[in-house]
Length: 331
Ligand SMILES: Nc1ncnc2c1ncn2[C@@H]1O[C@H](COP(=O)(O)OP(=O)(O)OP(=O)(O)O)[C@@H](O)[C@H]1O
Image (cartoon, rainbow, N blue to C red; front, side, top):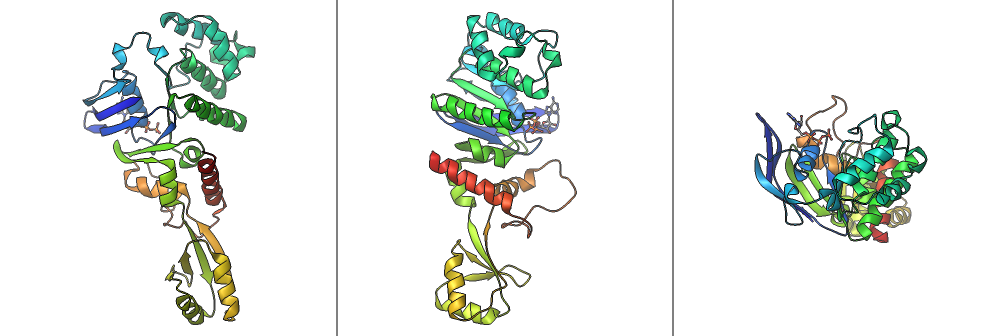
């Protein structure tokens, strides 16, 4: 368990982390989400005692990081994959970590096997791709067989097979009862992995919620209708107790996803339809709305999508929402 209480970090005038209080629990994957510069890495550095809080406190299973003997056996972390002595081989890098933490050398072979780096164990780390470096960093995190694992943007630089692998790894670590805390700036990534979400923006806590609740609150469907017989359709809908709202551009929208019922109603009243489609609000859009005011570095392009997305393609949104629904159902 990781417990943060009023955790705050200032760099001069800049408040990087602002009074964060939340608990990361065992047995689940907790996603730590926030736009670029939100304060995720700073928070993780404070958890590991690499940065000193300006105020507040953070404890690992009730203790401060510096109070832990052989800390790698309590908490394993991947923060910066490239922070490895490039002149060392993968094996030697892990052996050094093992020796300084009282971990038996045989664990080095085991974790190299787990992350799929056995074949390059005797190669120097400076020749590694970002994906290989990520795997080596993960091997280091797993070395002490810790109850708590923390990964900062672990899918960065990984190919699709690697991304699939890390998702499975995080879930299996949580299923073993470990605490898994993983940061990302992509809701779509978290939707496939996390059971719980902690969202921050400009250092402040914006949400601390289960993934299931976030989905229930945000992954709604609406039926979008265009018709030249607007008044007749509105009358028919009203008679059937269905509320339609004006969505601009001559489009009507009805809450829920029951397009069949609306289609049949229109047919019965001989109302011509030019469009009848189900729109899914994507979780990525919900995340963008939540953090919209806290985004530090904007691209000056299109404004964030409205509540039900821009008028364009919603296929991605739907895929994410479906993936979430599937993940949630699978438990
Ligand atoms: N050593 C430092 N000195 C001054 N400012 C810093 C320092 N480290 C971080 N910051 C600032 O604190 C804020 C939070 O940065 P941090 O790296 O924690 O965010 P992040 O959520 O991890 O972002 P990203 O997703 O881009 O990695 C940023 O505005 C950053 O510029």
